[in-house]
Length: 314
Ligand code: R5P
Image 1 (tube, rainbow, N blue to C red):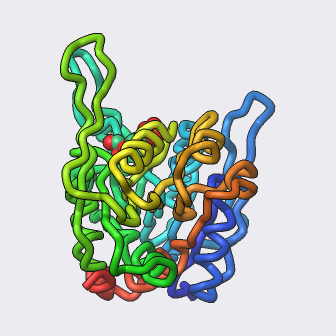
Image 2: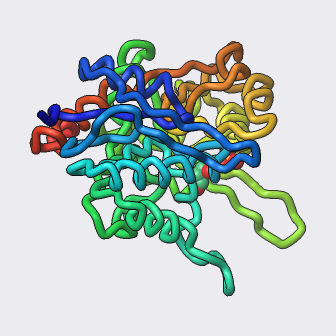
């Protein structure tokens, strides 16, 4: 007889998947995702999945293309094994930043990846803090975009004195996200406005809002090289901020980003575990990881029972 749900893990973030499965008290379905000698991906689901409501947990994080391919092939395997419904749980949706044509003759890769996931056989998608909400429209299947805000707000409330905080968007593009957080903790909002007045001149960081004496909280969806964040933190301190924290959903942290953060003036960078922490992240003194597993687990449980997911954020 079919279970309520089954959960399968790709190789991108097994600890997160295990934490989600533990939250739901569901054992992970046995599934091998391995490589041939030439690095082709091979998947073998080692249990009967006929008629099951299946959830594949796989972030398309570094190495992005390998993890994407694993997700597609796992989806194909489930479909051919007659799973009743397949949900691609993609906590970090790589390629999301390529959601428009930045110039002529460039692709919209986020749309292409959405097409690939759909054509592979996914019936639904569940993701977290999409780079732009409109990317949901790239999928012609139901797509739930969860917000990390409740997890982040809880952590902020536990650790910081809310009477003196200022939420800061590190760029003009992130204002909507920062404003939403500011509203949740009833804090004022400030914006870092980067400008290059003339070609060839270096960027000037103007701070919109008075940050003097404030504990600033920078919020963003992604930290990749760390440039945006570290530069914004520096500009805030120069403008009189008391200290600067950062809460970022997806710790992409490519190349030397962790070293950059460690050497920066950021008091602490907090990221969620949508992307598995590297050793560098684990040992960094001013980086902390908070788990989003209960939120994703709750959303999976509700999806399976056909209950409301949006009410998680009321
Ligand atoms: C950009 O639109 C994103 O929201 C992030 O601000 C950006 O991806 C951060 O990149 P980096 O850490 O390389 O500056």
